[in-house]
Length: 314
Image 1 (tube, rainbow, N blue to C red):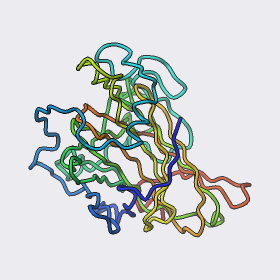
Image 2 (cartoon, rainbow, N blue to C red):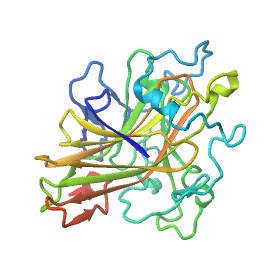
Image 3 (cartoon, rainbow, N blue to C red):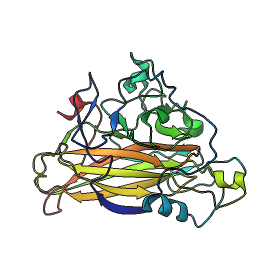
Image 4 (cartoon, rainbow, N blue to C red):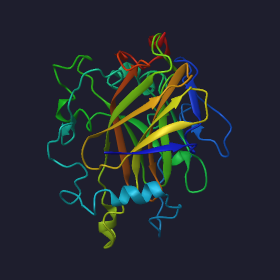
């Protein structure tokens, strides 16, 4: 399930990536702005600092964080230390995400990851024109978050699947930190196809939030599940408004789906985001993005075959 919002949010002002060769995220005015993270290596300070904290929560708790904590009704981990439930759902089984049709980017091909080609910092990774960014304000530090590729959560036991069409390579993308963070990845500028002007765009992404249940370790709370996933769409990649759905399901693969009116937009930008306002072991994974344009009278739908490298969108 999802929660819809329209936000001029702290992460909504990220605009389209410049080019695949230099996949930086440009930003409109914001005080303070999210930082592009595609300038690794981030070696000083260390990407994931692990100091000792007396407080689990020191950053302000937003409505989103409180909704995220309340969403599962206080359900704890399936077993102690098990952050991914072993049950089968319509989206996957345990660590494994099932295949689905019409995916335009699946983060699978190793060659698409910057850490495999000239960027030595695997904690500040990006994929085929999808560039990372993070908030750097107060408790939220850009250096606190790792943006990495993941071979286990998503592929599960199929990361050497001989039936895979990407040369047996399977990955998802992971945002992780033990400290407060707000980070995401922005897509390349995606033009509205001819014939779909003033129509709609529908975007979906699979996500999994690690069920850390950390509050139980301290003998109180229902797991203090304050972290959440988001899917944003910007109608007009250079605009300053993104329309969001939030995802709060944890411990198993789920899906965020969002449909917006294009209006006069000539292009869009898609944002996948993760956020935690607390000193928790937050790990949030994304995979299998789909983008479909719907014409103005609703009689035609076109799924994108590629939504990665800028060159693939021309």
